[in-house]
Image (cartoon, rainbow, N blue to C red; front, side, top):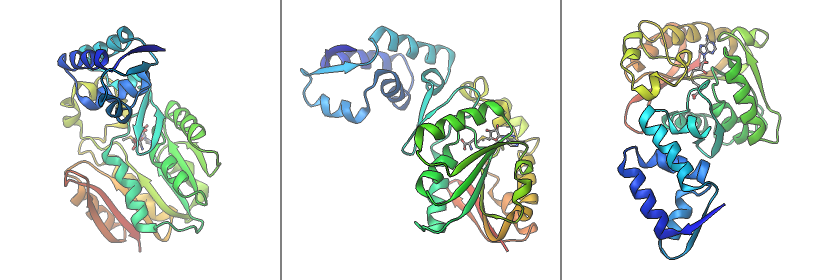
Length: 289
Ligand SMILES: C[S@@+](CC[C@H](N)C(=O)[O-])C[C@H]1O[C@@H](n2cnc3c(N)ncnc32)[C@H](O)[C@@H]1O
């Protein structure tokens, strides 16, 4: 534990941020490795002569910040942790860092189902770090969920995140290609969710370094037009959803209309393109008949 004055710390913080990077990444570094949150810091700033305690010394934190800047490695991978909604999740470069816009999927579920206590059965296809499924399993302890992924490493991280976040056992993890692990649940799902890889091949080449060089390709690439996985998920969804079961999908910024057409073609109703915080049609949802 390192003890220093708030004044000394603020001087050091300013120096680090002058080297580059953004406030949010720096906040992740401070919270994950330094053990101090921005809200705690804001309270201390009122009195710069007070003392502040850090879990690691400044040289260590500085060295991580410099690796982040020089290699463009996401700070979440360097710290091994990310924050998503109210969850603290383990992440390695085997899983996509769950994005803040994806947090809205949980709100879409709240809007559709409210805070009902009724038992429901949901599945998430391509769970990655487990973020979406874990948030739902915690919000709805009476629901049962299955989170799947094709990647064993991702499933292990997701399982660990669930164990660390919940005392319940209403979420199971299965490995396999999209609907394959759910063969024995045909016609049984009230809700299916997926944020599949949807980046078109050409766009992938131009992704920022911190994404292209570090995040798993399998979590990003969606084939030539980006719709390869979305197409497969939508086409088979009617086999697995109950009548009036919901499908919630995340898509690339310009795919909403195409995903909507795919849902219409596969007999979905009440189809809606839902905007993210930036006004982008990021989610497409529909009900099976
Ligand atoms: C965009 S990431 C989403 C991860 C997480 N759900 C999130 O929102 O942060 C897509 C996930 O789909 C998984 N995936 C890719 N191809 C798959 C397939 N054929 N079957 C099942 N999962 C797949 C990847 O391993 C990755 O974890």
